[in-house]
Amino acid sequence: MSKRWEQDQKVLLDAIPRCRAEIRNLEAAEARKITRRLARELYGQTPELQARNKDENAVYERLPYLENLLAGALRKEDYAQKDGHLYGTLPREDGSRAFNPCNSRHSYNGAVR
Image 1 (cartoon, helix red, strand yellow):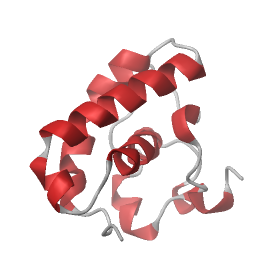
Image 2 (tube, rainbow, N blue to C red):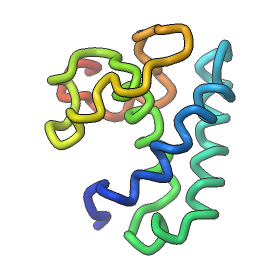
Image 3 (cartoon, rainbow, N blue to C red):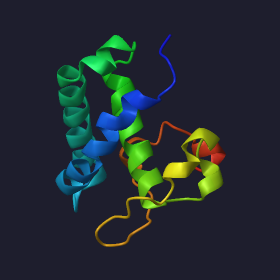
Image 4 (cartoon, rainbow, N blue to C red):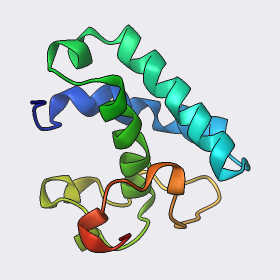
């Protein structure tokens, strides 16, 4: 079983600007492909992720979650309480707070389902 995201998500937080730049103005299906490629790359290049029992799919699911969280999409209470301190701390360049649907498997505490 994988462990909770903690310090090992720093590499993902640092990748958010790149992720945003690469998926900007793309259709959802193409943005998902780019997000998957980036997840594969980050996982492959980051021993910390591999050592903590994370897998590529965990990275793929976490990137859009963090992107939405940092942009302030949805409501703060829709995110895990442990992540609340990150809410809205890295707004998108255009100021949009629209939901990034690249991977909506995460329920955002019920807001998406």
